[in-house]
Image 1 (spheres, helix red, strand yellow):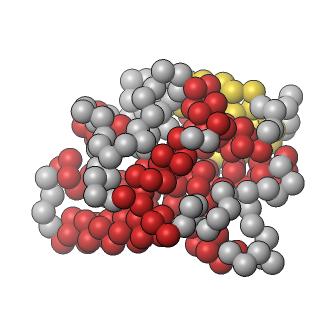
Image 2 (cartoon, one colour):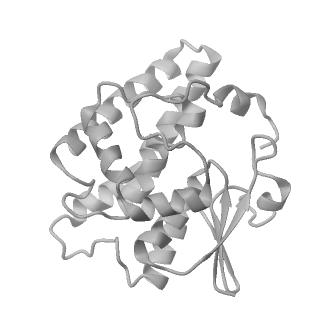
Image 3 (tube, helix red, strand yellow):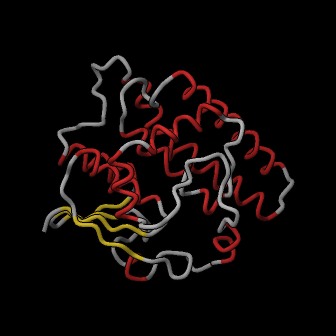
Length: 228
């Protein structure tokens, strides 16, 4: 059995087929519908963590976005899309590679939860302040750089695009006024590998590459579903 990518529709596992398409790696894509909001039982059974993404490669079953992308790039892609320590932009790459899922994604979740519940306490203020600073920092970076690490497209870009795009079906976030982010999303949308991957992973889904989220986000559905 070769590389198998298990993709849950409208989830961060979209990063995996995109990476494979960028690297020109052969893979088998298995698609799963939500049931009705969270992952179905058969997806949760793939790995003890019970979340997307999950891949299988021979006898290996691996979860967690960063681990999955790094494994595929180094095991099957000769380390491409990961800058080596000798590269002048190595430190910048490391920061943005980790920042997407370690800082930005958790902050968007906290902000979404606070806005959905109507919270107005100290934790809401902290989340909103952190979110505002993070978005400004990202926007400033993308106003002066074509890609997160500079001139070269890397795995850091593969990591960050989900919270800027598909995640907005859940978060309802707007990028109005953030010209750096919006120009970046247009560059992403022109990448053939991204288009191919998204058509395979979520055929027919609108790609949220503009300023506004969809008219109806799914945060209320997500908040009301307690099954995990």
